[in-house]
Image (tube, rainbow, N blue to C red; front, side, top):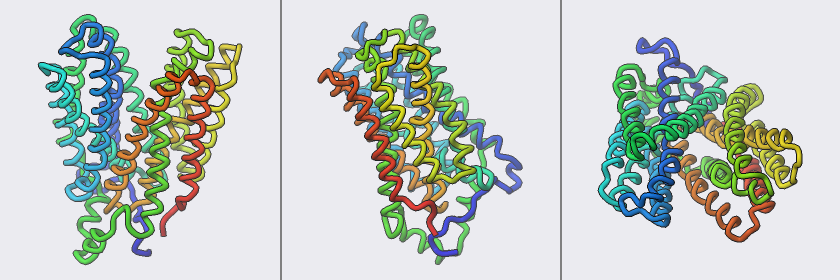
Length: 412
């Protein structure tokens, strides 16, 4: 084996656990908390905006939302080296603890500035959760099942988002917008004792840490932007950027763009739900195909098909069933394409720098999460969201294909 070849990973084999059940379940819950946080601010914004709570205006709410996204990106980039140095287990537990405490504190913020600062800090902790959970799943997966392990875990993201939206319909009116943050924070705190008792450390991480001292010295001198990894990282970062640009851009603007195409507002909202149902279906399918056909060909095909279906949405369809089918197929490929990028990252990098690599990919992707809604908003403002919004998103998917084409299927 060359010095750059990735060691095989597999399930934990120590006496601490004889299965992957607890890592799988607990990482799924961690990602579900990310799904909660994706939706919670959007769920409470109408109430806060209407009441002017804490002195918020629409402008300051936009700032709070954007600052939170920046916090997630910084958290994702920062946690990688820490997870590689101190371990996946303590990194994930610490991240969830910070997120939970700070999210509860948001509910008691006395003014706009404190609310925004607490959201930024809470999302620093949240941003650290996803890359660490991805590293866990990659390293606990059975040999040859890394893709499906990662995509199954990511269904928690969408389940968390849907449950939070449904919860908000009841909680906000009955108990106020503050209760949503309390519930999310308490949910995170309740997982901590279970994680402490049941979440083992990654065997791949422990093996890397127990390597001979001279091998560890070599490992520390090489990171994700040196040598052969530089070209690989750039290609994966660009794909992650484009992937989250699509995910957040479509989630934010699909109802509006479909409205400009002549569909009803109610239909636009329903199509957003169908888009996310497609996301869950796509995640379950994509992982299995990735395991059997390989990471690179699958992620290339997924982004390519996403581009095709996004472009097709620019065609006005008079049959409602056809419209819903087209949006469902778009959701199947767009959302799972981004997750396949994470699976590809986990496959390519060795355990000693896997956390850093996943953190960087997630962090750069979060920039796309800011850019996507901004581009969509600019097109809406200019009055060209339909059909050019779909063409723009299709172009982003094609650029991801080009970026991924430069990445080797494996590093040897």
